[in-house]
Length: 359
Image (cartoon, rainbow, N blue to C red; front, side, top):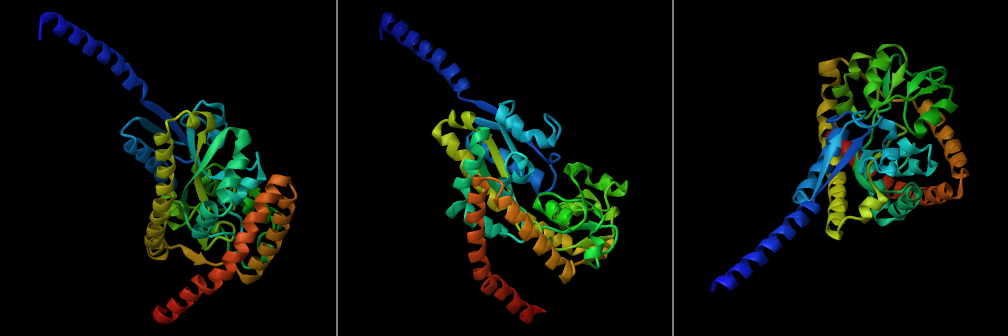
């Protein structure tokens, strides 16, 4: 190669390098994920971190997600507003934290006596659930992704035993979601605190009882130190879902492959988080009485009947709130009735046979 050709080739290569380096730099993004949970909290905090890590790894760093726990950037119950406003790109939470914006969001988390974790996923992925969820969030400029489930939760920690419906009246109860409205109609005083304040709320007497998640999370939170009686299972959270919400415009601005990475990462987290909760709850349940001296109870039948009656009233009223909530309610309840008929034979039938087999 003569000198002129060499210099021309060198100049071309230099120009390509000068163009490609900024282009590569511009293709990298760093997003902030805020959460409604203390960072690293078992099950919920770990699910948020898992989603962030999966997106970062699968994109080979082209979309790096950094997680901020509750209160680090925004207060826990302002996460949706932060995503909507664009001050952060995404959040990890549970939809029923935002029912002040739309009562329909209850159905994408859980309702009393409602869908289990597996049934909720079925409705979201193969029924109308996901399409309806996107419709509900559309006015707020965010896109939802199903990102986890705790499975059946606990009814809560109580300073005194619940022996009858009369014991509900006047009870100061930290309880989230529609379960709180059901309890209120039964005479309880409902108090809502961020997750990180539950232990101190019980110990200070600010509340008489509180629910959080289940054995694994509740032991990690130290709730056994504050109340003696632990009621299992929850009537109000048979399979509450977790979400990742993303600013709609920012998501639309991602390349198609990064959009797909976000979708698949959230779906993978949904599957893995349920397995994580189930495994650790099974291990932790074994320790409740033997290690921590907890007295495990179940809600009496007459209390459950009263809760079911109040739930029916709450759901009927909620379905009348607005046309969109009515539409979501109809779809959810139709699938719930079919799921109950099926699982009454299948899941309940299997558990009955297993009881015969193993005692």
